[in-house]
Amino acid sequence: MPPHIILNPTIAHALENNLPLVALESTVITHGLPYPANLDAARRMEAAVRAQGAVPATIAILDGKIYVGLDDSQLLRLSQLDGSTVRKCSRRDLPIVVACGEHGATTVAGTMVIAQIVGIELFATGGIGGVHRGHPFDISADLIELGRTPVTVVSSGVKSILDLPATREVLETNGVTVVGYQSDCLPAFYSRASELMVDVRVDNADEAAAIVLARRELGLQIGTVMGVPVPESAELAPHIAETAAAQAQAEADEQGIHGAAATPFLLKRMVELTDGASMRANIALLENNAAVAAQIAVALQCIQK
Ligand code: PSU
Ligand code: MN
Image 1 (cartoon, rainbow, N blue to C red):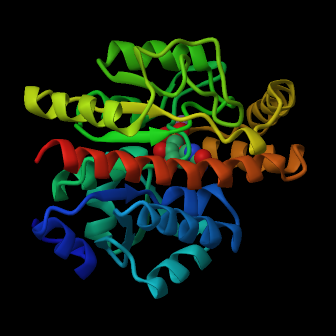
Image 2: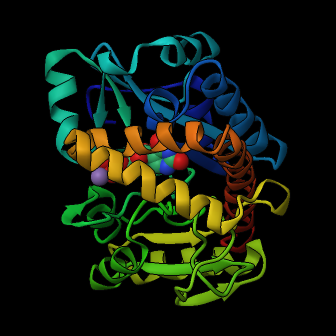
């Protein structure tokens, strides 16, 4: 293991014994949801992974040390940190937090980098970053990472606060395999469907695991987006999500909010503009995605024996 990376004993044990593992990100904890909903969501995700027979590995940086697998006191500490004191870490930020001894939360990109270093193939989150509306050059580093790092990101697709068609194009250009889990289209995060097609649909964890395994056997250095629709009971009606997203983006533009601050601002405004409905959808899909990722990790372990 490289220096600066500290494996929780449960993770070291799982890696040694080839047990199914699922990585979980931390930006959703520090920048995506408010306390205590963030702590609750993080715990629910870990519990959902365990309930399917896999081991959860939440990844975050505390005082310049990269932890893979947090114990409960570390998770509590992270969830209570003021987001402004935590660097939102994509690939580029990892050397900075380590060198400067800072706290850091890993985005989809940052989590993929660490997961690959330690050897975790499955990763569950809410939604991937994308191309921002009206800002065709504000392309999340998540999309670039997906084009180069062999980790499968189980998520509910791309948030409708983003430019979905542009994001879909960038995924394609980067050679990312886009799969619909029990879905023919790329999910739109708060809503189950979008007009954008996936490359292939799978209907169960075994079919999903076969794609992960084939990618590995071919030695391809690419990521996979496994798009899982938000559970029906928590879905936000598409027109409500769209109206709120348009307003949130207009406010961000007015206030000149861009770069890494854009996504946290937009998510927060979505919660306010939908009276909490977007947060309920967000939490429900996080928990569901964690369960699906764990099922795939378990299926992968079975088929490779
Ligand atoms: N999806 C969520 N909540 C989040 C994020 C995504 O439901 O907090 C985070 C992820 O960590 C993702 C990041 O990688 O937002 C994208 O930010 P940016 O657009 O700055 O790349
Ligand atoms: Mn962005």
